[in-house]
Image (cartoon, rainbow, N blue to C red; front, side):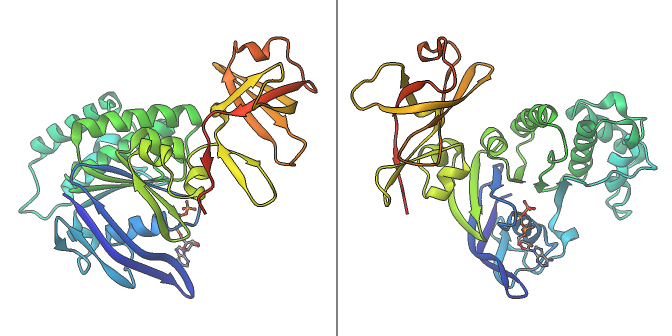
Length: 328
Ligand SMILES: Nc1ncnc2c1ncn2[C@@H]1O[C@H](COP(=O)(O)OP(=O)(O)OP(=O)(O)O)[C@@H](O)[C@H]1O
């Protein structure tokens, strides 16, 4: 099921939350809506779902205008950050709920429901928890059950709003890899809201970068990372350094795009070492150049020659290896 969003505008009072949004999502694609808090991601997701009405513009599913259709009729599945499972129901009954609520003529038999629920629990790899209650599950397990519940009614579109937002960093990482694999298997058109660029890069087929109610760029993860359309996109997609050439002009480069040496060399600039942070396979060094207050961060492999015996206060020489010139 493809989704076409055309010229969507949305105000809340005088505030424009979405400004002329155009976006086409292909059938089976997993698209991330990425942007800072308040940029309009959730509003756009709610408009796709039918939970919110746009002021102007149109939403079509597979070419068919659904703008006037209610949530129920759109056949979308949801997983939200705090979308609580029913506490008084077992995991099995939570997943079965949507099927049992179907109108009588569409409702499968209890035998078919049981088969389906077990298939879904196997899909999210939690069949062994079928008889537990939500409070007996970890946060990550709950979100996987919420996903199984959303999938039970065979939605045509899956909408996820920061589904792993409340979980700790390690579980988040595991779950997003798991979600990417699940999507490979199921291939359901899915839209995923996140403010975490790493999450978007790792999970999505395409990323829609949003800022203040507009789309800044749409592209595959590597595309938006390598060819950012604006300074905003560049900064939002990863750590970045700004080095001023003069008060009006600066260049941008990422911490891993810095060459370091201990001896002065042509094209290298001197800087004082302010901090040395071992981060596993890489080490991050914070440098201070005389010409600006903003520090420069460099990331090199942990056994890089320039780090040998390095201490704070010493002088290092650096050179940006790949430079993205300022866009706007
Ligand atoms: N019902 C509402 N009434 C008034 N303002 C609203 C309403 N819903 C959202 N807004 C405003 O619209 C803007 C966009 O909100 P939205 O929830 O879409 O942002 P978001 O990008 O999802 O942010 P976050 O990552 O913080 O959830 C925000 O400034 C928000 O305060």
